[in-house]
Amino acid sequence: MADELTADGRIAYSHTQAGTVVRVAVSVPIAALLVVGMAGIWQVYALAGLFILVLMLFHSLTVQIDDVAIGLSFGVGLIRKSIPLDEVAMCQAVRNRWVYGFGIRYTFTGWMWNVSGLDAVELTYTNGKRFRIGTDEPQELAAAITQALKSSDGVVRRGYMGDAR
Image (cartoon, rainbow, N blue to C red; front, side, top):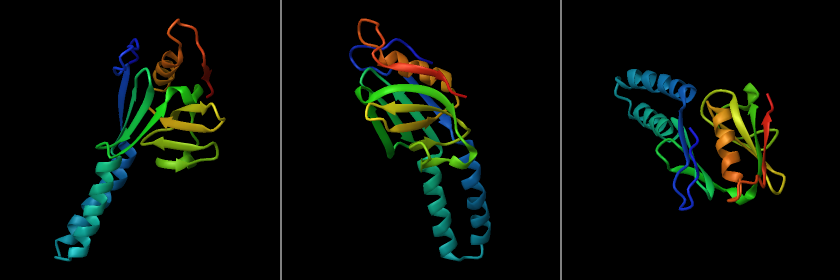
């Protein structure tokens, strides 16, 4: 849902992807630990609490774009990253390999933040390094980043490389 960018830095794109895979993968052990914990073993409750913390931190991934930066935040927002637009040379929609997994990962192509699915947008920084943002709407995210990379006179100073699927 890309909107026009504003000169005062208002959010022009915002999307939160639910981490379905993460939610299921963490909720099942929590339920099992709570059932086992009924025996009164406090260590089991402590382990369940750790899983609940992981669930809170990684249950979703929110991407926000304004005219200055791309903002990423997992879950409740304690884990976040801001990528200045002037450090981004281009972007393209890509499909991740299943072995890349979920969460914060270093892949064969560079760092990746992902909570669910295989679709992503790959940023190429001006220094040549790459960063992938997992999303369930890669075309919309790539279009929003491309719009944000346009200069104020409407000329694209950096680009969108299309769909690399």
